[in-house]
Structures are given as structure tokens and as C-alpha cells.
Image (cartoon, rainbow over the protein chains, first blue to last red):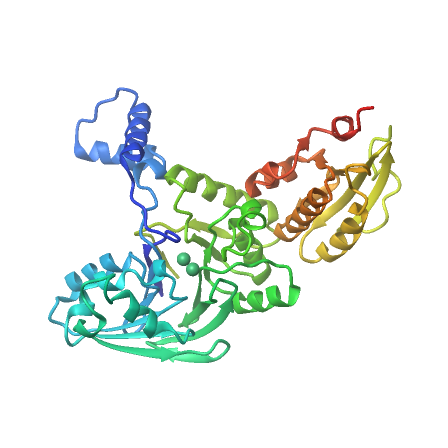
Length: 318
Length: 133
Ligand SMILES: [Zn+2]
Ligand SMILES: [Zn+2]
């Protein structure tokens, strides 16, 4: 099983602006200290080897979209703005004339998790099948509303692909697209659902837009049991803990260190922070990554926890 | 002035959750100890919050001396936030003091250093929170 992250930003897509570019150019030039680079290869070696991640790459700005590779079809968690590039890649890999089946698991229908569909090229091509799975009863309604007047010129009825909606129930086990799948309800305005996908003895949990208040041990225990022994957790780590439990209480999101504590309790091997706060720049996110690693080290009681910061383009092999 | 709640008077167990108490004028120093995580947080909450009831403008001020806390996970920090909210709601004052190296890092990583006034040691916290006559 392999995960490819197409969109990792929370709430709203963001783009690196002029000031952000300038900060990075400045940081790179400062680091180069007047050196010259005799070849492209030498330049690449400098970029890869000497610049920090925030300067040389950054985390990207598309909203939630993760591809799960290794099943029978193209399997996707959420249809945020990252879906546009996923669509382009699939068309490039298989050609536009080749009909494909897509299976999508939807955490919920908030805008940042569905906004990519109107820009998903395969949705316009007859012969493609797009199966949308989720626990909300309002899924189809949300997509129809998104593509209706006066908000978008192409109406839902005019999409070329064939769509099907599949109602799931949390707590039940499903086998879809070659994965064993279960869902769990999460605390979020209008509810959201996390998904556990398993195949060939490997397991990944996609859990975004969930506020783990930890004020009820039985509720926390239920989620810990859902995570138990997972190889990977992709987790809504949008806020600092101080923000999460004060000014942003009941906004429906968790914090970086809550994720670490849940992973430690559940024996998760690899923790991936996801749904990044749009006001954070690449340097903020890099610092949060380092701090989260340090917190995991302080709290570690057994096996060390691997900590990744999701970015657009990241791939994780399980 | 006593140097700490946890000298010879520590009340058993290294697990965490117990909170010792000492009065210094109109400042109440509370000293939790050990590891505060999901296994000990309930005891910690039950020991801490009732001792904040008279934390008011005309009552006592609270200093949390964290020198004996080895670490605190997010559930423990959540209880500290409840404590801060309770004191603020009662127009009382609360501060933390004497964070060990790990607790200092945890406060910084969780941004709790922006929630509480943090003092280097308990003497500094007591001096700052003692009512000026
Ligand atoms: Zn979201
Ligand atoms: Zn949401």
C-alpha cells in the first residue's frame, strides 16, 4: 500500500505569494555565501543537500486529497483542490480514452473536501465511473449544490462520467476496491468520519477534521481502539494545543501533540500531520514538524514513533 | 520559606496525579508530581480543580510549582487549561513556576507558555503573585 498526498492544507487552499518567494530566495542566497555553481548538478546538490525543506521545497497549498495506491481501482480520500492534479496525472498515465473506476472516501462535505471535483478532468469523460463512499446522507446534495447556479457554470447533470453514491455505516466492515475498510464518527461541525484501510497486512487510518477533546475517556478509548496497531495515521493536526482547547474550541480540529499521544496509546508506527492551518508559512510548518518530533521523543515509552509532516507530493510506502 | 512541597512529605507513588499544597501568605502553592498522562489525569484533575475554588481577586492566588512533574501529555495540559479558565472566570490569578527542562519544552511546543505566566522558580512566582499592601 502506498499513499500519495495531493492536497494537505486545511480549510482553504493557499499559494506561495511574492513575499514568501522572496523569503526563500533570500534564505538560499544567504546559505550559498557567494559560492558559484559550475553545473546544474552542483546546483541541485546544493539545493538538496544544504537547504532546509521549507526553503527548497515547502509543503504546498492544495486542500485535502490523498490517493491510496495498491488496490483495484484509483482510491482517493477526499476531493479537495489537490484532486485537480491527481486527475491530470491519471489521464497522463492511462490516457483520456481509457475508462477507469474511481472509489472515493469522503470524510465530510465541507467545501475544502469537495471543491476539487468540478476541476477533476476524468469527471467530464463518458465511460469513467466515480463511486463516492461515505457516512453522510447529504453527500449527493452537497455535490449538486456545488455545481448549480449561480456558483458554477457546469451543472451536475452535465458531467460526463457516471456517478454513484454509497452510504456507509460507522462500525461496519466493508470490502471496497480491494481494501478492508471501516469508518468511525468524529467530532466536527456537521460530523466527519475517519477511515481505516487495510490490505495485505498493512493498515492506514485517514482521520481529518476531527476534534479529539479527550474529555471523555470512553470516547478517546473508542478512537484509540480504531487506530490500534496501524502502520500509519494521517491526522488533523491543524492547531497548537493551546489554541485547540481555548479560542478554537469546538472549531472541530485537533492539535499536533494530541495526535502523538493517541499514536502512543494505540501503538501506531508512523504519524503524519495533515490539514495544515492556512495562515502558517513553510517555515512555521517546518518548525511544527521539528517540535512534534521532539514531543514524541519526550513522551516515547517504547517503540519510537516516526513523525512526518504531510506535503503536496509526499509519498509514504507501507 | 519552604523550598518545595515534595521534600520528605511526598505522598507515595511515582505515577503522578497527587497534588501537594503549601500556603505562603495569600499565595497557595500547588505541587503536582510524576508523569501526568491518561493513566493519572483523572486523579490529577480531582486533586487540582477543587483547590482553585477560592482563587479570587480577594482570595488566594495560585502558583503551580511543576518542578516535580516529569512530563505531562495533552490530557494533563487540558486540565491546566481548565484550571486557567476557572481562575480567570473567578477573577483570580494563576501562574506556573519551576519547570524542568522537559516541561519547559512541552510548554513551548504546546504554546501553553502563552497561556500562563511562567516564572523561573517558585520564589519569583510567589513574589509576583503576593498582594501588594
Ligand atoms: Zn477541512
Ligand atoms: Zn470540516
